[in-house]
Length: 149
Image (cartoon, rainbow, N blue to C red; front, side):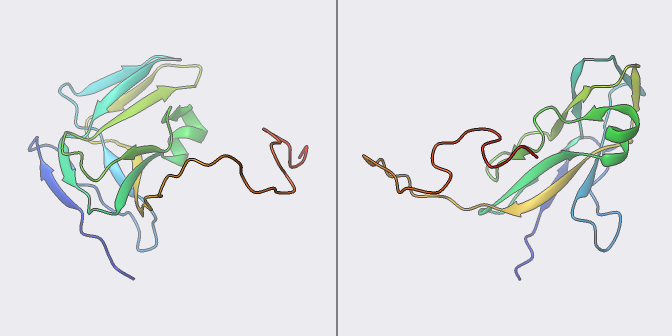
């Protein structure tokens, strides 16, 4: 199995380089790099949290930004477009969209781990317009059509 090389360039000296927190972790933790010491996220509010670095993802890969399970389950802090995708040709600062689905304001501190990032392979499909599609047992059944549970 090929191990992709993720190149990181700090844009702020105080930025934390993403890292795995255990040998078997699927995601690298992303940390807030705030201009002020804290950022308060009110209930229902969406904020864009800077991470203070840019990166180069190898061609054929993407970075998927996901919520941290502890923040989501304990405080309702999650990623509104989760997982969000960072394409391999993006070179700007990595920022994480955070939404507070909790009932109380939540304070993010500089250096706090706010999300996780999974580097995953991407397949590019060949797109072909056709007049008809093959039949399946499900057919055109929509949401929930494969069962009520």
